[in-house]
Length: 194
Image (cartoon, rainbow, N blue to C red; front, side):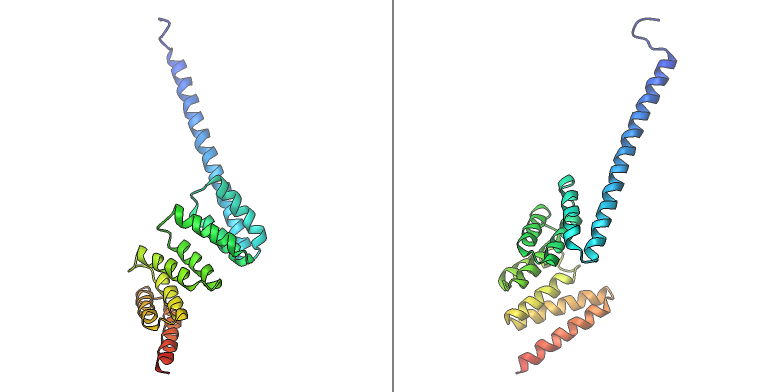
C-alpha cells in the first residue's frame, strides 16, 4: 500500500466521523431553533397577558440574534404601544417597514400609533401604503384607512375605502367585521345627511 492510499476501515471511520459531525451540526441548529421558538412563545404569552414590561426584553433579545424576524418586531412594537411608549413603538414599526417594505402589519401598526398621537395625515399615509401592497387581498388596510379618512372628515373617500374593506371581508366570510364596517358606513351616511 502506498502512503496516499487509505485502508477501507480508515475510509469508513472518516465517513462515520463526517456524518457524525454533520448530524451534530444539524442537531445543534434544530435545538437552537426550538429554544428560540420557545422564547418567542413565552414573550407572546406575556404580551397577550398584557405583561408588556416582561415581554419587551425577550422580544429584544430574539431580535438581537435574528434581525429579520418580522413577527417578533411586530410584537415588540405592539408591546411598546401597550406600555404607552409610543416613541419606541414608532421606531420599532419604522424599522420593520424599512427592513420589510411589504409587511402590511408594520404599516398598520405605525399608522395606528400616529392616530393615537392625532397625526391623521401621517396615519393615512401609512394606511395607504399598506393598502397598496396587495389591494385586492387584505381588507384591514382599507378598513383602517377608511376610519382615518372619516376622522379627517373626508367622508366620500372614507366610504369608498370602507366599502372595499367590506367587500374583501365578505369574500373571506369574516361576518363580524362586515357588520362592524356596515355600522361605520351607516354612521358616515347619517352624518353626511346632516
